[in-house]
Image 1 (cartoon, rainbow, N blue to C red):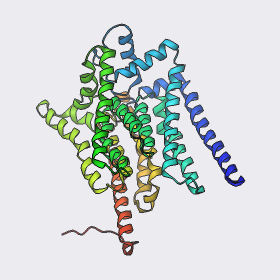
Image 2: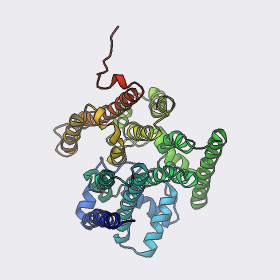
Image 3: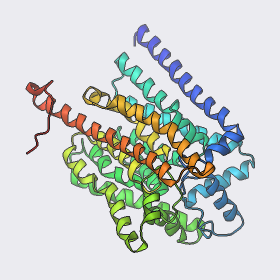
Image 4: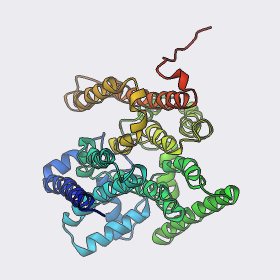
Length: 418
């Protein structure tokens, strides 16, 4: 290593340390403001029925007093979270350690992103070095990421496990990658959709592909089963299955959120409820096979697309799900030039960010609006996300066409109507 490369490496470490330190201290300072934490933890855009820290505290209170945390129908989170927070409470009864846990979880997520960037970008290029800085900065200084952390949404743990899984999968470490995906699936169920593209990445350089697939499937099922068994040992009951995954699958809590489900199932007749639950749940899984077939050469792009679909189609989405989707945007750098709606979708995010809370305030506090006000802006929000996903798919296909057909480079693709 020559002196120039050495200086560049030292300079890089200083910048990374500065980015991480700023991201950490911003979160810690904001988490010390109890009024702000209380305000954000009550926001429907941040805290849902399955990610609310206030509901977690309610479940923890029942658990510590020997009562089933799932008996009241209010708590819908995984039992291992109860154990984690009860240990923290034993160490210190103040909220300082809890705040530290949430801040460090985001820092660990950013570290996984940095690790992922090291695997995805060349280490020798100075431009790629800046891409690494940007990928970490876009996560740590993303306002949605900061308020998800300060609002103490437990969805950030799921995001952390998913990003850690992706950082391991790019290094072909199947056991660690599948373990962290199993943890994410255990916490919020829907990350299971990322398993097929994860397998595509793992089997890329594996000569015994069939053996590799079956081995990884068995490993995933064993790890998930062990987590469920551990949960049974903790609660001494299987009630947590219906209270957690049952609530996610059957949408038992219709508290408003930024998703598409709550308003629909509030208005629908009970006789049609089961049918539409099946249709809605199927909708998130139906894209997996077509994407894995058509875009099998680009499994990481499939993961990004599925993260976007999760942020739209899961039963209890929050802005933390959009944070996960956005955190992977830097890895789309090879298709940016093919994307057509970047400016419009960015403006739409700003539009929804300001109007969403305003419409909710008009509905629930002033009473001059109704549920349609808030639901209409969530429709715009989700429509915008769907436009981004469509744009990504178009850009991938356009890039693929130009690689396979260089003579088509620069020629616009148009749809022919018959």
